[in-house]
Length: 333
Image 1 (cartoon, rainbow, N blue to C red):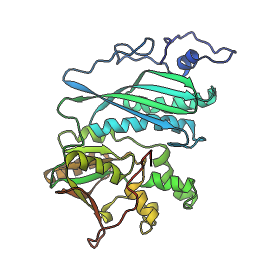
Image 2: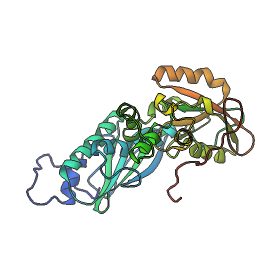
Image 3: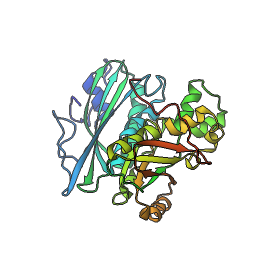
Image 4: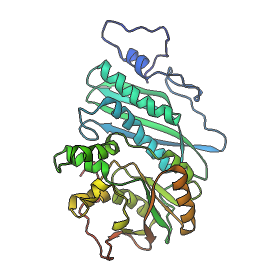
């Protein structure tokens, strides 16, 4: 993080805060799980014997991934949550993270809330912040996360086989529906928005599910850009096709009332920011997956199957294909 070591006797200064003081006050903690954490030119990390490191980076940009006036505690949570979701999709246990922040100015109240949200989630999953960087600029948040997974048990995108069932966790589309409300595309009641908003602002990474799917799932991915777009990555990597049952998609009561409209279908099939897991598994594991669902208290829903060919077809309750206009979020379209 650029970085000075933690000084327990540090006291706030009346002069403008420097980069190193900012890091020390808000982002420096002990890191007993690392060989070397914050305080040098690089962290030193050691995976446990028999494990390999899983590494992922995600960037959140103000105005693109979150609104400029986003609550800083929720934003701190989400900044780490989207990276934890990548670990879940790999079946990896999260261990360490680095955080790079560009800030337009030093706002101590904002930093206090942001770091509190970040570390509340980090503590829940045992993640240690071991480094990063700060600079002045438009608000930009970038986390690199490191996890551990047994060498031959990582969940990947290229393992889906013809005949596999396709599953998703939780519910789909609430984050996209909440964003549509904030952007004025639809109008939700206060209660309806309150039911959808946590999916957008406080996504829950499915880390425990990812760990439970080791040895069960043939492929997995987290849904960040929309179900069709992210399932499409599995299909491309595995060189197979999919048939989805539209009526089986798990959606909230709020979204269900919009499902006959184009917007509702797009939220469920193409809306981003769900951070649920989409995975495939042989039919022989169906009962085992339902057992995992019960043990974790997390709904897991079979939504289709893997077939020969290329692409994805979504069928309605009568078996007719549904035309979906948007395939998912793309930063450059």
